[in-house]
Image (cartoon, rainbow, N blue to C red; front, side, top):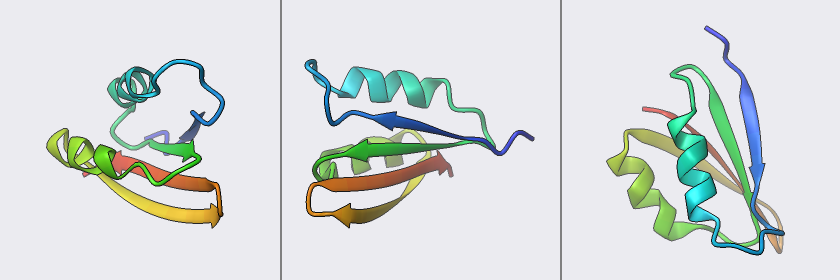
Amino acid sequence: MSDAESVLDVRERDDPPFPAISDALDELAPDDRLRLVNDFEPVPLYDVLSDRGFEHETERVADDEWHVTIEHD
C-alpha cells in the first residue's frame, strides 16, 4: 500500500485537459490519490469519475483555484 498523492495542475495547459486527466486516472494505484488543480470547478468531470469507480472531494482554495482529490471508490 503506497498511499501516495500525485498532483496534476491543468491550469496552464494549451491543450484540452481531459486526456491528461484520463491518463492520470488510468495510472492511479488502488490506494493512491490524485489531486487535480484547476481554475474552475470541473463539474462535468464528476459523472465521469463516478462512472469509472472513483470518488472525489472538491475544495475551492481561491477565486480561480479548485482542488479535486480523487481516489478509487
